[in-house]
Structures are given as structure tokens and as C-alpha cells.
Length: 74
Ligand SMILES: [Zn+2]
Image (cartoon, rainbow, N blue to C red; front, side, top):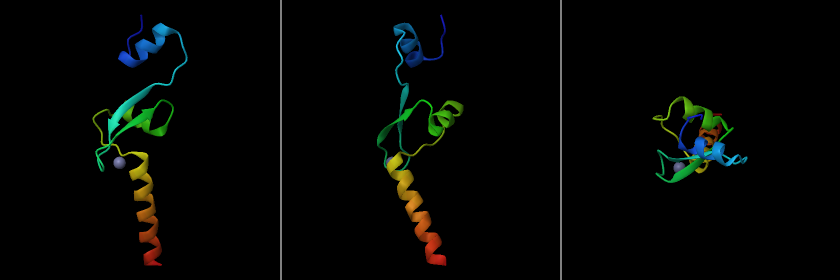
């Protein structure tokens, strides 16, 4: 028996190929979003489960704001 965590054990027992996701709440909008196995965020989450994470919406918002900021300086 392999114990990683509840989610992984469940998929292991079923013997099915399912996507492993974690529900994480966004530090900006406080919405709960899913971190999907294989993504960069999942890797970060696995490394530091107590870390601060932001959802895709906020990520793209921040990116847009950052880009705007950069353009404003030009
Ligand atoms: Zn968010």
C-alpha cells in the first residue's frame, strides 16, 4: 500500500487514470480553485502546501496590470 495522501490513495485503489486536483483558495479573490496535477502550480503546491496561491483569473489580471505598468513607463 502506498500512502501519499488521501486523493492519491483513492486513485491508486481504483486503478483508474484520473486527474489529481487540490482545492486551494486564492489569496486575492478568496475563491477556491483547483490545482491540477502536472501543472507548474501543482509542483509549487506540493513543495509548499502552506504557500500562497492565486487563481488563474487573478494570475492573468496581475499579468495584464504588470504589462500595463510596463507600457506606461515606456
Ligand atoms: Zn483569484
